[in-house]
Length: 569
Image 1 (cartoon, helix red, strand yellow):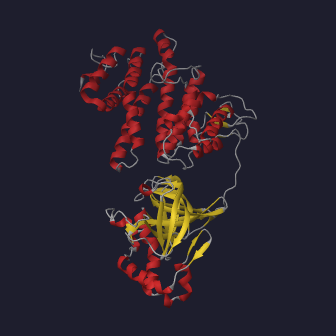
Image 2 (cartoon, helix red, strand yellow):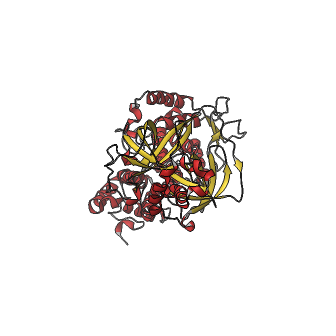
Image 3 (cartoon, one colour):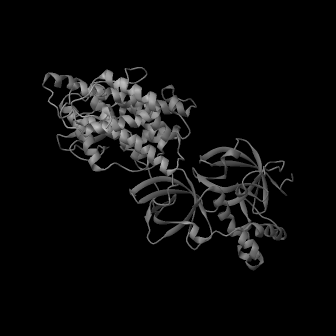
């Protein structure tokens, strides 16, 4: 066993002997192991947690606090690495998450051991003077654990919430819950905080667990709460202006305040002052100016819409809004596909199959399959052109085996979309904002939708809310005006001499808007293209982006003029 793992009586090189020994040991670990010193510290603290209760004194606690402070920078680097790399392999993602949570878990367990000491003795008084910082850091690591659950659309269990609530109750009973401290550092660029602030941060985040936020949006919200949590104050007495409440003797997160809890353990707070700041930021955002206070935090996905959502969810009183009625269904399934090249291939298959069979055998279906509606104007093509298009389509038609598609169970439907449940295993790609194509089993027409909500019903089962974008998307081919398509693109991104795209009329704000889904690398505001769809050709211009994914975007399009034929290179 290594010397620094030795049990009491301690040796000279024990890092927990004093603040100086802790600093020297951490410096040596950083010099030898670099960033891996993070794991060395977690292992050493885990070994300390296995020792007996003897020797727990103020010197040991000061050394622990120093070890934590000196390696928190490495810990934050790991957290940032996790958030910045959204496409990590599952094994690497699990390993990194495990490193992050293990660090916080061990320091939580170590600090927990000092809560039961007698604070009346001379050394106990020194321990008591450190308790505001200890409690604040414990709340911080509880909050970190909760965030990592929220990132993956899970919710902590009742035991977790009971531990959080009881820890705050401990701080209240000893009068240390509102004593300001610097969580990590001495105030250089770090805002002061209290155990109450950290307690409120984790509970305010818990109010946003409907599965509508991505990991980066949750992290942004956490940073906002770090700045604004001191605008909130917990009160023991119920009042009509209370926004949220918590029962400290229960294992539940915060909830909307509707009436007094009827217990001495009830706590309440109002969000009015916090909302004043959020509304001021929102006004600047909507005016095209990023508020200076949060400018370093703004990245793709962080916009005025997110601030509006926070203003609604944390409003002083509940905001009432209507949503489409959900109708429960049973024994209904859909086939699902994702990735734009595959969606394009599946959506164009029915057209190609009809063309191959010959539309003369199905005259009633001719108009439906060959017309395309642009800005309310129905265009059509002559039947004598159909045979030529069918010949080209016959060469490219590739059937998709039925068993290669995912099958999800439909739980409910509404005017705006549907709710589905699925197995977590095999659907690890599912994420907020993902573009999916789906169809009823045994049908041929595909619809497009976007995943708007994710809830983990259990470890093995996921519930999704999908907003329908278009029930009749049309496969399109996109070319520059000079007809010179970059033929070095992957073959699955090329079709009929152009780059793939999906034309999808979209209903927004009571009106129908012509939109086009195309590879995000091909988008430029105002860019003009020739769009070919179902044998017709149009010169279009790309307008503002409505939605954006990792490799695609949904852009409004303006029709410039119809064309008789596609441009030749």
